[in-house]
Image (tube, rainbow, N blue to C red; front, side, top):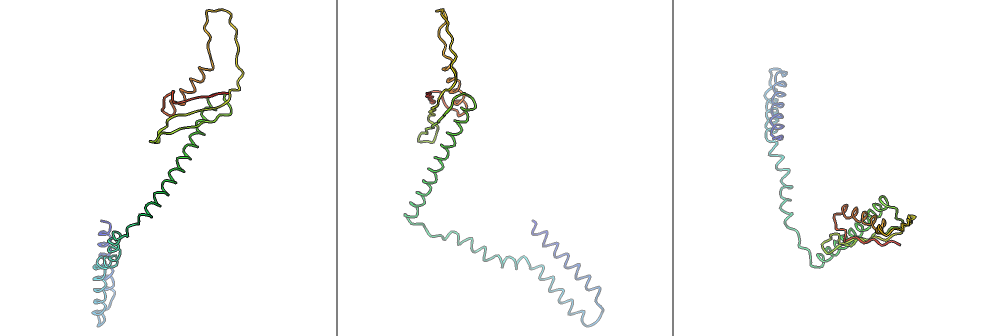
Length: 184
């Protein structure tokens, strides 16, 4: 639509320009020749879309040449597949490395553990299969002695590890059974 409005605008401007030139010319023998030149100019403006189409015809024909591509050989297909496989493996290693670092940072922010190393495992469908975490607990353990036999022993460390497992499981959308924590 934009093309049509530009074309009509150009025709109107050329006709106005031709009338303006015709009014300025004196009435003598050269007026006929000048009117002929102005008429040819108006015809040229009217035919400009057809001229543009002829100029773009080579581009139009090149669209059909897209379909005339040569078929790659079997070796080229295999090489391309190997290259894609290597790229995919590189991306998977990078993803694992980043995920390990993210888990380590999450644990450092939410616990007092040090020397943390996280390792993620994926299944064949590239889904998170499990997380194993190793680290050291450098906290000073609070010791309380209760001589009465009525209170069962409570293990605060197990509660903290359970909370940590729950945090990681909820963050990554996996079960707590898929997370193992090994502390020295």
